[in-house]
Structures are given as structure tokens and as C-alpha cells.
Amino acid sequence: MLIVAVAWVYVVGLMALTEPTILAGILTFLGYCVLPLGIVMYIAGSGKRKARRRAQAQAMTPPKD
Image (tube, rainbow, N blue to C red):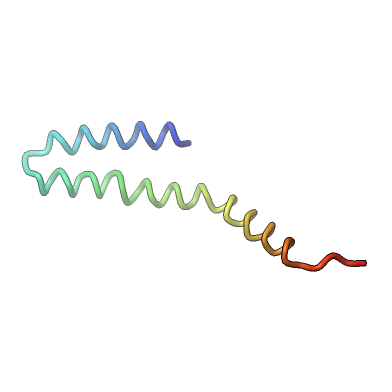
């Protein structure tokens, strides 16, 4: 998943560089790269966060005798 994200940043970065103004380039990068990629990475990491929370809860629970 990380290689896809890096490739997407590269492609959108090149798109942003071809924009006629700096503001258009920044908005292109934010609109096509940062926002969508942030959402996708957040959704993709939800399983890991859930597993980490579950492991933390089990570690805090005293063992049953």
C-alpha cells in the first residue's frame, strides 16, 4: 500500500508542477493528493488501530485464576 501512496504523491506532484500558478499547484496537490490519500490511509489503518486497542485492553485486564 505504501508504494502506491508514494507513486500517487509523485504523479500528483508532477501535476501540481505543471499548473500555471503557485496557488493552483498548491490547491491541486492538496485536493488530489493530501486529502484523498489521508482518507485512504486512515481507512486502511483502521484494522491495525482496532487490533492495537484490543491488545492494550487485554494487557490491562488481570489474568483469571
